[in-house]
Image (tube, rainbow, N blue to C red):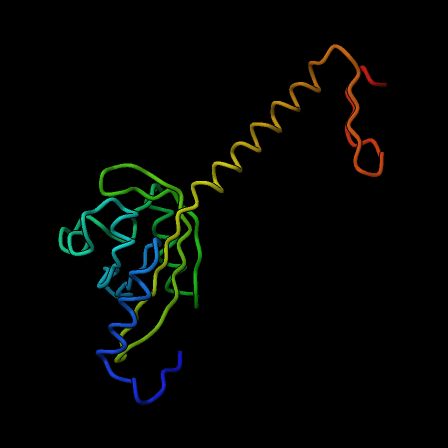
Length: 171
């Protein structure tokens, strides 16, 4: 990011960060890489995880990097991958402060400041895409069952009229 010298000061950069992170519905946070604790969370992140505000998320000690529904072994793998790679992306089922869950994609991007390591973390809700994938799988299973148990011949062709699937009665 380049900011012209006239505006390069901590107050402008802080205000810029507030505007950018406040204008999104995504979770945006800064994670201390050594302690695995968040030092910044935006308002959109508080809303996404069903907390009243970012301060509550940061001070209650209930919210942490492993706020996803996976076993300890998977959590350890996530932390190891974050430490070893430049950037890491994962999709998980996250748990909110109220115990509800949602599917989300998390991207961890490392950076350093004053010789300390941090991660910029962005989490976007992917419930719709995940639900669409589940619906497609269910539809494919219904179609497969229809083909297998139909008492008449059924043939499926592609756009070039080439037979793709045929059940036993179609032969």
